[in-house]
Length: 108
Length: 108
Image (cartoon, rainbow over all chains, first blue to last red):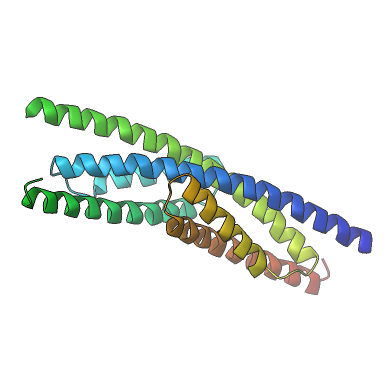
């Protein structure tokens, strides 16, 4: 049984190495995604567009649920994940819009 | 001003295309990550290891916060994101452990 346990621990360590690699990729994708949504927020603020866009979000959710099904990921989780990210993005956009309107009021 | 607005809309559409590409990558990374954590869950259940591992999680959080800082992502967001994912993984692991103990009780 000890050899069995050793092999299990070795496999666990190997799997954790792969998880760590995927998490690094995840962080870099999220960093890039927020760079882009920051720019979207600036554009929206400069042109007076609303921070949230429910039609766009509905299309994104439908698409990501399909991609999730095709890649064997729980589509409910994919939707929850996008909602989690979008909440953070909308929070950033509201901050940008606030800064923009304060700037406009101050004549910047 | 109309040319300005047109250019802003064109840029918004371009940026959304990039967000959609990153989201597809995100879904595929998450699909692969859950395949690996399902295997981790099976290993843990087969060897009677606890579903959660707080030391491992603390190390993961510290590492991802550093990666986030290096790539200009809010480290608080990176930590919240990992916690969000880990909650889902632990839920899966508890399900796997439950199935395993029911299987063991039934002599499977």
